[in-house]
Image (cartoon, rainbow, N blue to C red):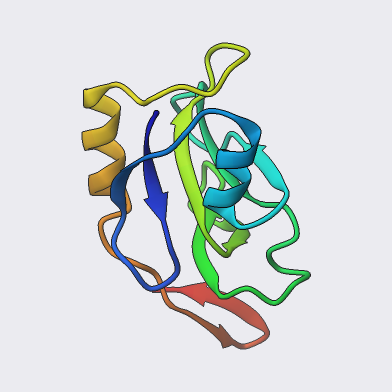
Length: 118
């Protein structure tokens, strides 16, 4: 399946990965958790469930509807279509949309007791 890979410190890119559990776990380098933080409700963000616990580098921030950071993904992650029981490739339109959205990697800093992304 074609997914958008998100790696700490790197621009987003398209990658072909298998849709089996072993391939998905390999892509995120660990146990998989899928969250749905986007307005396209069937677009899932697959990430390493233990990324922060294991001290992996911070990757991308997840925002609420008001633009406030609600979480930060640590380690490798990817975006895919979760509209069925099996993970699938994103459509060409969604690949383009989310490649643009995640074109630039984020850096993080603590300011006045809060973590900010830039």
